Structure formats: structure tokens, C-alpha cells
Image (cartoon, rainbow, N blue to C red; front, side, top):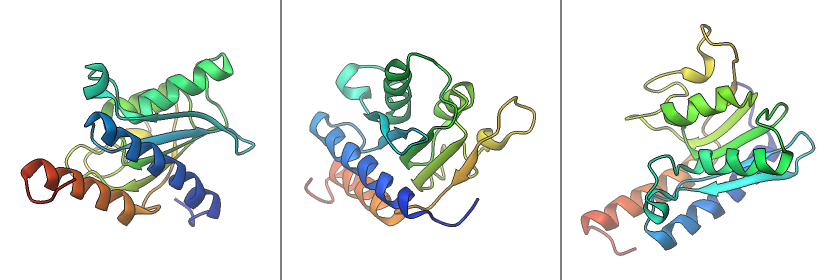
Length: 159
């Protein structure tokens, strides 16, 4: 883990924009972007589980698929995945399989995170690929959006 890069802050803003779009389909507001080595956004995604009735419709999975299609390859060497919430085990596995070398995330997921909170799949030495992890980038913004969403579902706050 290194210092927060100003680019990470900017890219997280793009992921937060994606997270807000998830609200339109009543999906949990999580967003992600895949950024190429030159800083170009190659893929973007938001949670689409409710919209598509797809249990794999996590923001990271959508963004990874989008970037792979754009590049014409499953290997996302040199790319950075930026996501508003710590990836789960499924998404962490996809990150490893796509050979993404860096993940930047906002809020920690203390219940299902797989980048250091519950599991650490991204840095598991028994796997064939390891990922640099940059947590806590605009974490409060990411967490606040999630808190508001879940509070609204409990009837505590209007959305």
C-alpha cells in the first residue's frame, strides 16, 4: 500500500458517479472503473444485480467485462480497478484471474470484503497473481452513499 495518488482521487470520483447511477435501478450504490496504463477509462460498471436479475452483476464484474471487451483480451495487465467498496470474494477472484495489478477502493466491507478485511484474496501468496491494494480513497463519500441507501431501505431516511 502506498500514498494516495491524486489520480486515484479523480478516478474514484468516476466510480462514485457510476454508484449513483445504480440507484436508478434500486441496486446497491457501488460503482467501478477500469483504467488503462495511460489513464484512459477502459471499462465502467455499477451494481446491476436487481436490474439484470444477475447474482454476478457486481460493479467490478461489469467494469472488468467492459474493459476486456474494449481491449479484446481477458488479460488486463497494467490496468487499475477503482471501486467504491472493498471487493467481495467473487470480484477479488475475477481481479486475480484478469491479472489486474492494482485495486483502489473506497470503503471497507467488514462483512464480506476480500481485500484485507474478512479475506485477503488479492494478496494471497498461494495464488499465481498478487495485487497492489490502495484502500480508503474517498472512503467517507463511498460509505455515506451506502449508509443512506440502506437507511432508506429500513425506512430511516428517504432516498
